[in-house]
Amino acid sequence: MVSVMQGGQIDGDGRVVGLASARLESSPWKHLQLGADVAWRPYRTGSDLPKGLDPLDAGWAWSADALLQFKRWEARAEVMAGDRTDRESHAGPNAGRFLGAWGLLAWRWPTRTAGTWMPAGRLEWLDADRTRAGGGHWWWTAALDWEIDGRLRIWADWTRERAQADTRVLGSKHADALQTRDFDRVVLQLQVAL
Image 1 (cartoon, rainbow, N blue to C red):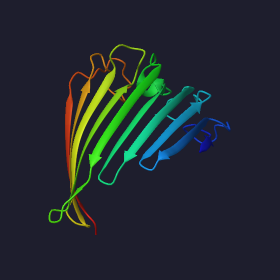
Image 2 (cartoon, rainbow, N blue to C red):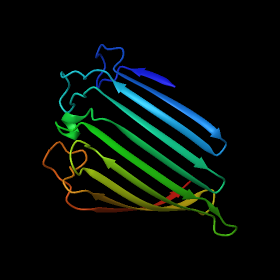
Image 3 (tube, helix red, strand yellow):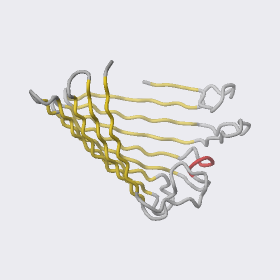
């Protein structure tokens, strides 16, 4: 699959190719799916933007992913890297490249009397600025999904985020905004089909 877009933050940029991307997928075995992506922004977007929008720089990014799936369990993983194109808005003026990866493992455990249980674990890592020491974020997640019947489901998720020393707060426009502590987040959901 190949796509070509204007790629600006607003319409009327005038460029035909502002962002191009491509994806390849293969399934060499019935339980395995492999994929790879590449994206390219050939130009810096315009600087005459409405308030609140910052220009995006030119750059490349790529990713590769794999899915291993069986009847009762699956494993997924992806790695990605590229140029930071949002330097002015989020990454900081000196940020150059990013690198990230994640992996997920989930089991499906149906029972005769207590519905279907699905425990899962996920590990994520992101270095939002590879040009500086530190800068890495880690996320560990443990989740449990309990499908009681076809209409009722309870889902619980615990995530811990940890940042290396001298790591900027993700999404901050302030170069001196450093993440100084770890975070825990717990989510509990009750889902009812009506």
